Length: 275
Image (cartoon, rainbow, N blue to C red):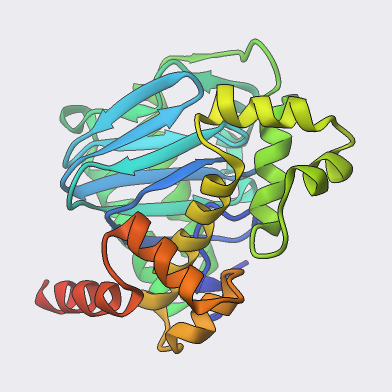
């Protein structure tokens, strides 16, 4: 299934199982998240940190990473950067689906000196298909070409536990579907049937942040995408991201991005035109 124009503006960390998309993502930073599909990343310029589980990996230009389904991961841009990011449903993986669902890599990263040219070619092809709402069969072929070149470069092992059964995964999964609405410890506790203390520990010990900071990060990440992918008024973007008060939206946006929403849109629109 391809994303409609409206859905194409949605950040890839949201839980949209079954959707295919590949976009250029400037200065990508967002908190721990997970989804049921595979995620492929190719760094174009700059560098960023990929956190997967308890491990941390630094990605440089030309490096490639493949995040398996159900793996908790986060990105943090190290200054100005840009990468191609693809989200691919499991049904597009063909014969590689079994390995993706039953194994985990010791490292999700393929360094650039081991990145086959077909990987770069496949990522560029998937981006073109997303932009033109192109041929699904061609997209599937690109996904399988990418996997054919990437998986042999990874040491695979059986997971010690199922990540989706972990409370952290349940918390992150629920918030990824509901962060534009009201979110609190009380709401999470009722939705997940778990005590507030246990959920609070997830944020303090696993996610290393507070619930409010985590939700604000997700909302601002969504706002950044909407500002670049649509012509919607800033006030409309604020509402779509869960902020009823524009002042709160502008304050949180400046705190996280270092500029106002309008400044952000102008800056990155000009940067894209210059490329």
